[in-house]
Length: 138
Image 1 (cartoon, rainbow, N blue to C red):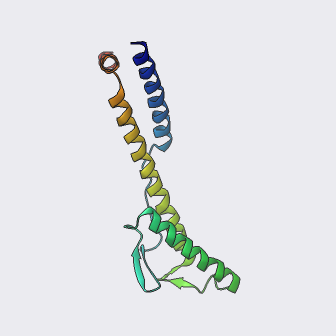
Image 2 (image 1 turned 30 degrees about the horizontal axis):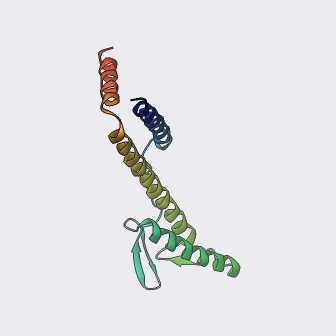
Image 3 (image 1 turned 90 degrees about the horizontal axis):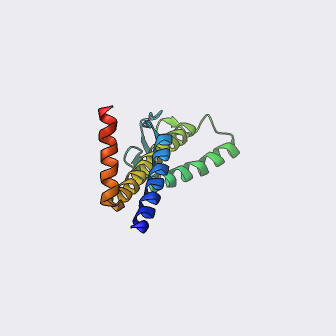
């Protein structure tokens, strides 16, 4: 029985850590683009709204290489891609990556929390449920 108590204590500590991380992530991040999110590079049109994290990173790297060349050539104001300045595309992609990363972190924490809840002993689950009922009755 003492091993179960130790496991339950460890699980509760981990759940507490997850709760703290969730509090830090509180609030939905929204993607508010500057561009129309439809960029054509090398004859291929991409929609930022549907790209995955890896695709966004690859596109960001490609645009950053363009930015370095544009700076070297002094063409910052003249270089337009699909109707928008290079910096606007880079800012949108970074913003979209932040939103995607935020969502991934929330999902990961939710999964971990579910796993920990499953591992709690029945006695601890009952204790927690009684505690929540007591709180409701106050």
